[in-house]
Length: 354
Image (cartoon, rainbow, N blue to C red; front, top):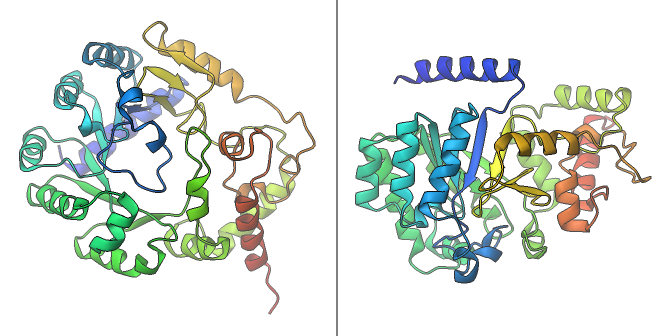
């Protein structure tokens, strides 16, 4: 199907689901298993055999796909870990294709062999997204923690490109690769692809704060956002500051949680978002509608404390949310200093004196 047809089809589905107040997207973590152990990864704490043994069987994963299908959700993202690390990935993927889902695959790329690339050529997903954190072997493998992984990711990129499979490349910026930013950007653009860097790093899901130590300085993060984010020009930021001051929002969840996307973990639990895993609804025993109802109630919650986030005059500039605050600070309503500094830096630049 041509891209323009996909776009029109997608828009029609989204509009229909919005009118019926139901989600459009499911992000399904098939496994926490991954051939890499990236230093910044927030799920790598569960990338071990003991945890992986608890994950869904093939039959259970397919039963959940049926529930997603019957709920009317058209967009399905397979992620992890690395979904290709499951021995039954292609069985699950082909079943989802037969169900008619519009499928996106998020993968490390390390498992895209010639055979895997051939399979995707015959049964194309909507697109595949790989994470490329360096274009030099030493830096890439410093980040990935796995020797000889650089050659695998580079081979995967060209295998997919050669077969005409739609490809996106994402880069996670950290202290390890910030100096290579221009080189990664040039490599990506030479492939004819959009460069998509992200500087947001979070604690691991078990509360390990190690990834936070790899964050770039807030000033540099703002500089990158201004360069690469479409909504970061000074006029737009001033409007967001104005809106923040005028629109009092006592709601605790000021993000998109509980709205357009549902999230399912490798054990079959429907969770609020990729970061907040408690409470959850197990879909082997319950329906997707049960999770939607629970999370809609949760996201209507209000601030209960005098947290400085509650009346922050620049809250629309901040990347903090209850999920991130809980993981990093232990409290849903707690400010996260890193995000506060970013928001203040943006405000200062918008109203700098000449």
